[in-house]
Length: 245
Image 1 (tube, helix red, strand yellow):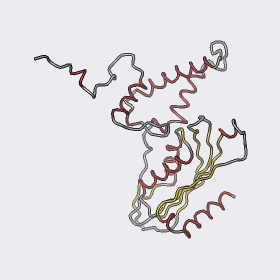
Image 2: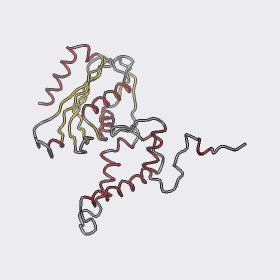
Image 3: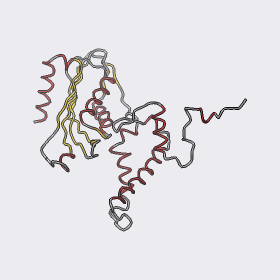
Image 4: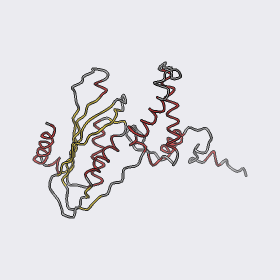
């Protein structure tokens, strides 16, 4: 009886041990095998193995050098752009898109020992991101409204900024970013009500297209009691409006 080719029928076989396979291909293969989404604003840290971010940095640098070459920029002679490919690769992976490649920041949660049940507002929190359509900057502010209950977890004030930065440090569109922030805080705190308002400038409008310098985008997500109770919603939005003035 002929022994089957196990490699041929093993659907879990991966190219990870193959020499010369780009690290991005290995990471993508893991994501697909796990049937995990890897959109621009998704976090993929669980699928990156130790040492691979450094290799990914080298890979992105090489691709960015190709972009500069296709833009007909003489990076060999131009002293201003000789190291640009490396700088841009580091900026993407370690700064403005780090929320894709790093795990969630450590956040200590505290029980609501005093059974607080009054409106809490945090903000404005400065946010920085990049639109996933043109990779142009998004600069704005976020306000958070929380209506805790006796079973809610509470987090330190600075942790709101850390969690929001983790979400925003990815290519985003504002509507989805606000929803991701709300989902994350809801899962961490389990409040009776949650409200998120974001106001931002979009440089894809300032730099290109209509080149309108005055337009801003404002959107909100309301959950629980903020959605059901119009008086609570009005109180929150009124207090936010007063802080914006």
